[in-house]
Amino acid sequence: MEIEQVFSSKPRLKILKLIYTLGQLNVSDIGRRININYTSTTGHIKILESEGILELRTYGRVRMYRFSGSKKAQAVAGLIEAWENQSQ
Amino acid sequence: MTSSHSVFRDESKLDINYIPAKLPHREREQRLLAEFFSFLLQYPGRMSQRVILTGDVGTGKTALAQTFGTELANQTKRKTLKFRYIHINCREFRGSLQPILHQTVTAFRANYPARGYAADEILSTLLQVLDEEETTLIITLDEFDSLIEKEGSDAVYKLTRIHETRQGKPQRLSFIFIMRDLKAIEQLDDSAKSTLQRNIIRLDRYGKSQLIDILNDRINLAFTIGAVAEDVVDLVAELAHSETGNARFGIELLWRAGKYADASELSHVRAECIRNAISAVLPTLRRSELVSLGFHEKLFLLAIARYFKENKEEAYVPISEAEKAYGIVCEEYAELPKSHTQVWLYVQYLSKIGALKAEVVSTETRGRANRISLPSIPAVELEQTMQISLQEAKGEL
Image (cartoon, rainbow over all chains, first blue to last red; front, side, top):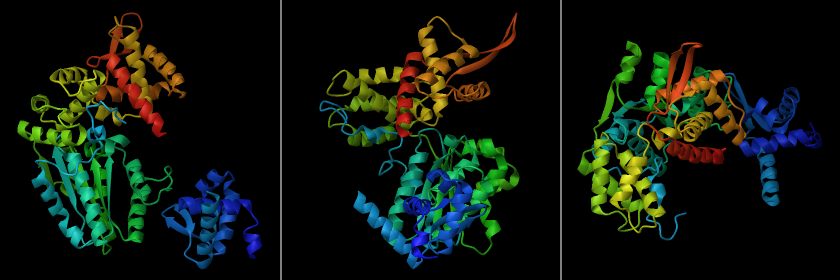
């Protein structure tokens, strides 16, 4: 997927910001916090996961997403950090 | 903040949650506890440990464990070892294993879902997380009796035998169990019992002279110089000694007496302040016990206190009236009142811990009725205590 496609979605950016701020979260929690339904949340997360930005950690039945260690993930985290620090 | 003429220098040093840097007259027990865990610190993951701390109220069990935890954190920082110490009071979770384990996991994974997962699942998540982080965890389960009472042998077995299901993997979980007495263990079946009865550290009641040392230690930290005279310390120690050598009781008494001194704008704590304090200390329900009550239990107690404050002649309140009073208090605190069944559960619990007395009486015309009394706590005192406690709880929300 092209970069403009990945970042053209407001919910996806919200998800990234949320996970950057809170660390690991499960899908229901993410959906609840940014106020979108489970199916949409899963869809957005799948895209971010397939791009290697997020990764899944499974603890029994609990599935939590976090930033992967990839270059893309580091770059996104860096972008959010710079953005958030600037806006403070 | 304390005002300029206060007898206190830092009253937080008298708080029940304050962990003192040193524990007078518990040096031997401290050494013993450290000894039990020394192998674990040397060779993390090679073995797990279980230690029971037992002793009467106010003999320093919690302080001993917490001081050990602080020392452990310092040591591991110096040696860059991966150790964590977590202290949990089981009574705050009504002795239920699931929320206790959830609390533990959230120390590592803050957003782990609170509902929908059984204790077993959370326990294996905990071990998975510890493996991921290559960390050894020591959990202190304070008031462990309440967990035994609520969950029985299965829970104890699960906790203490967890490593047997992980043959060949590092042993990452160790426990300190804190119990007032060991009788609760008798209820367990033999296999659960055998996992517990190995390393037991008994904390004897403090003697009067030991109490004087402990009180002086805290006075130096909490009060201004010369604010508490020697004979006053002696009086407090005497009272704490008669209360089964309860150091916490003595410390609480000092704090309260300090408050009386401040209210009377005195430059020091007089013996009279201690006498005032002792008469105001709730005989059956101490501040420390109130901390662990739920928000609605506190609301209910406040309602009862107000009922008896307004109806001075009455010794009993029917449960229906008590519920009405509770409804009014809920409105004041912008809370939805809990159902009748839930309220009845509160009444039973509060009755069990001695905060109130609930009884069923037969009436001639209408069968049986439930009624509540406050046999040992002055309503005004209870009202004040609950109001402060609720305010604090609201502040934390």
